[in-house]
Image (cartoon, rainbow, N blue to C red; front, side, top):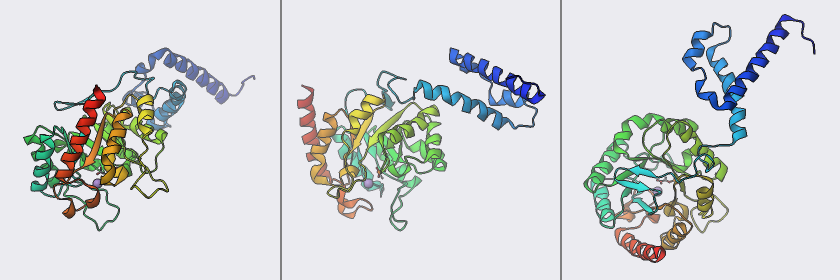
Length: 335
Ligand code: PEP
Ligand code: MN
């Protein structure tokens, strides 16, 4: 094609320049790209700087999808991600237990729970202070006061605190009291929240969405990783199916799939997946047997008066029986 008009000539030159730019990027020179500020300085209109930056990003997306190196993938990182939280480790080989009440309800409640959990070597205490409840009229959690109670109780026993936050604007006030930020099932695809927790320096426990596929789950984790937070823990917590014998259907195959396809630690929430106390021991064993890096379960000193999930929480004596069974299993398993 012979180009005669000035605009066509100019566009032809732009295409050639863009191609040259692409070749440089493919030679791994992408770190030398202009920053937003630099584009701003060079740009004197009429297009705005954001549009120009977006144009570059859009062009480069092709390379990323062609390389298919998602940050969560084993292609990107072959070795397992090991996460340090205080003096404790996740993904290092020894499965962790994250236990505690569904919701923080009082100082006494969390103190009682942590004392027994600590006695059995549980290093991570969970407890919701910002609760994602189905009904707006149900107990919504104690908010920051609850987090303060939880972190005070945890500190006595050197335990790490795991608690959910539901929106980006809770992060700043909640962070001093939380060691691992939980992003709940209902927020797995709250992309703004994922981006916000991606910018934080604390690990994130990401729960699988109620009806999410493996791909959607992994891409939700990618949002956090892409913002620069490498410490993401994936949590299988059951999915919605037609089956109503359990609260959700525990997708046990998710564990080996996620372990194979990502380098992130994977844990299983045996309480919210089953909603049944009578099958916690076998499901915990199953989770550990397929390679989970830990299990989560709800424990409450007096479940009958619990303000949320009363039926599915273990009381302290059930918790001790549970630990007896799991310790026995773990000893046998590691032989
Ligand atoms: C929880 O762990 O407190 C919780 C609400 O679980 P999920 O987000 O998996 O329903
Ligand atoms: Mn619960």
